[in-house]
Image 1 (cartoon, helix red, strand yellow):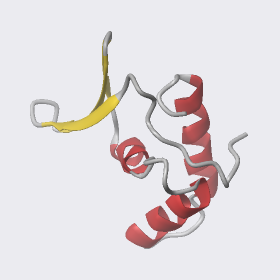
Image 2 (cartoon, one colour):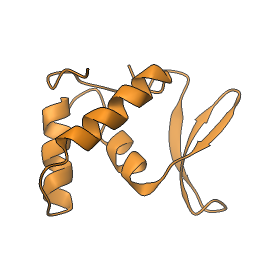
Image 3 (spheres, one colour):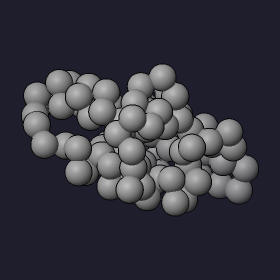
Image 4 (cartoon, helix red, strand yellow):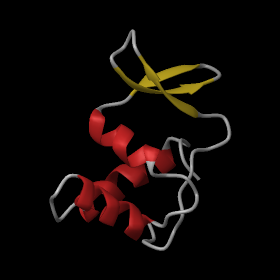
Amino acid sequence: MIDLSARPKLARLFRMQYEEAQGCYVLLYPEGMVKLNQPASEILKRCDGERDVHAIVADLEQTFNTTGLEKDVTGFLEIATERGWIV
């Protein structure tokens, strides 16, 4: 379970960038690359170590003019943590 006060950031071995050839954001690491869908890239862009999870959710809800994203965001962050993408 992700703590809403946690301040996630990309793990040291990962770098996110936009790839023209792929037409999307990718997560690069020494052994390869992960192609990210739009929701994943929007969440990871905000994982800067400065904002807590609550602020990330609030920013996404404001940016996309919606509500109720907390469960989706925390679910993704749990997976990203398990895969070692964020700390």
